[in-house]
Image 1 (tube, one colour):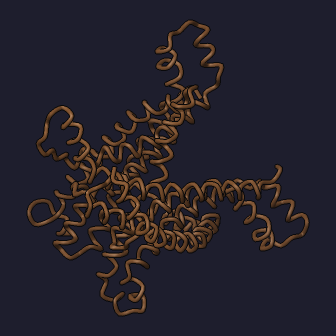
Image 2 (image 1 turned 120 degrees about the horizontal axis):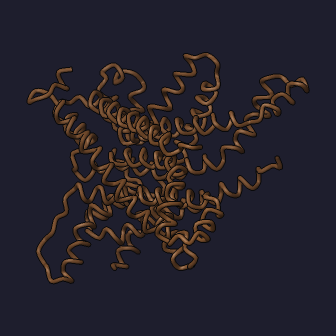
Image 3 (image 1 turned 120 degrees about the vertical axis):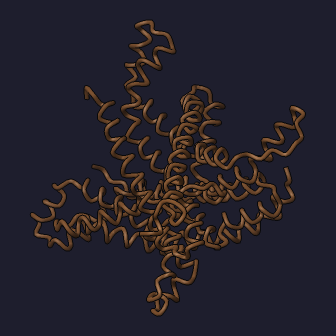
Length: 230
Length: 225
């Protein structure tokens, strides 16, 4: 137990901050994912074949390629791509991107592909009459989406989004390969310096279980809130 | 775009694909049996057996696969007693450690898939079997299992694809699978995009094949309800 003490003698505080880092990366990645879903869901539902193709390309590629490979692409290719863009604007210095940004972008793009599928499914399962009724009442496009479709869609999407959240949370463990100090990386460091990998990796597993357990409880509450009236 | 690199790295990556396929098929094979075993335990009425099976699937579905591999590969070697037994022959090989971790992981997901498939079987079908005087054992093997397999095909197809992506984690325990070799080529040439296109293309091709095989099986074993 003294291995987990806070302060200089133990790894308690380090692992505590690492857990906070995991939560931070997961939330950022989830939000980045929502942003991508916001772009690609309309593309997948569009009437135009070309736009459909772009949307399908995104979700198929990301969901068919291992997460680790995507992370390596971002890790090794990220700063190169940014420097290339910067060179167009006449900036030729070396740019290094922070591991947090690379990591949450990579995981965000992955979780975005899953969120896109969830939103597409949710929108498609809303009764067509709802769209027509909104149109007939003369509500503008913006109001149609935010006041009528979105609230109904969220109720259908939340159970599946909770799955996406679980996947995202577990995927953050892969960012440890880029050196960002989250639970997995911190356990690796602790295991290396104390020569006690069994204890620290098991403890990491317990931390992840705790995170998934708590987030499930919170999401269940959200689910009840959004299914009022059903 | 460096097309020469793409062409020269293709044979290396294809060779590594073999490792990925070996890992995938071995872990799916063992995982299916493990999953079936735990699904049967889940259906047991004894609360302790039931809770045990639930705990297994909860733990393996609630933690990242990476943690599971690390515990098995780095962690288990720490136990002195294990080093003296015959198990050490298996546990010192990263290849077998990866297969054990993948098997336990896919077993947990498979047990959930099969359990829900067993539970959606209409009671009328089992009752019909009973009223025809068929023994419980035969009902289970000849009626429940075939229906459950058919019911769980779509979900199991997804699980196969997830597992195929999961095998990429073998590269973290020094195995040179498709992702491992891709990472090696990227870190020596610093051409991530080209390598990503080739390696990603191979993964997508495998996903495409698995997807279509499952679709074919679903069609073949579909029955009128």
